[in-house]
Image 1 (cartoon, rainbow, N blue to C red):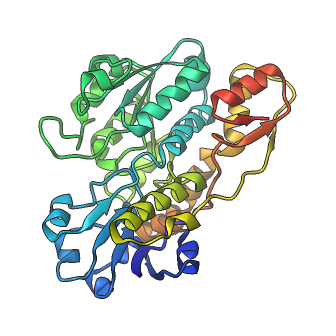
Image 2: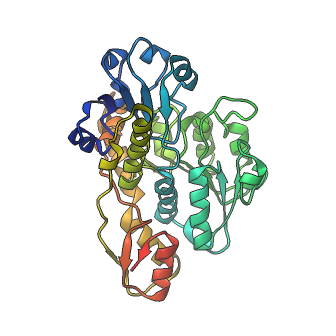
Image 3: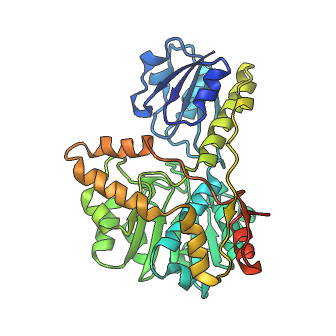
Length: 372
């Protein structure tokens, strides 16, 4: 079994140990000539997969270990008779925890939300639902919109006007050009001007969902704050925009060990089913160590300690700014190096925890921890 894969996918060593013949490459470097003897292609979000890449190759299966599929030409795969799978939902909790950690890392939003503020969620797929569930458990109000889903499928559905009036607006929609609701530049200049003064905007979906030039102008005007994990012209990150955002990270919101292994396992399971192989059983995350909870605490300070003790987005922000500042004209390559060498973080959800007061254990449970 010959597999060409993005070298940035975890668990590949286990596939090799199970007998697969792997060719691991940087995702942006995968070309048609790499696939001349491949049975399967496993990618992440940075490899455009289309007819030009696949025509004339023996590839019988394509899997993307991501929930977003805007880099995949699904029609071309159907025309070529190539089986396909994505990993929708694999990184949902990781991205939800990223958003919560962002709220904890910045001044004021966590306190404000716990005191009665509200979060607006754009996109109510796997990530939006996961985030909504976490906010419910923490007692934080929220409203969601997703015109791409049936009305009955969206809990606490709100209008865009209601979303734009929220204290925090966080984006978790797919990138699509399809009518009647294309999401490219969903937040353009006009939409940004409708946001309430002082809004915190978080984009952990796809970069082009926000018009980055309009966002730059909105930030210069001092209308609010923004946190970007994704960038419209990625891997290029405009220096003026990076200088204005409250936090900037290199497209790693979903880069927990659990999420990335789940993404690999999801597409490998689909490959097993499509091609009759049996590799998915070799993929499993190592057990997480038991976290000792603080003896006492309550409110925002305790929640902040729990969240930032596992993941501090300010560290990724500093590393991104330093790497791009030192890169000269090679900023795109520096961005990709950060993603490729990213130290995998563990999620709080599912992590065993012990100790602490009843209130501490209650908050840990609200974050999905396994309380011993």
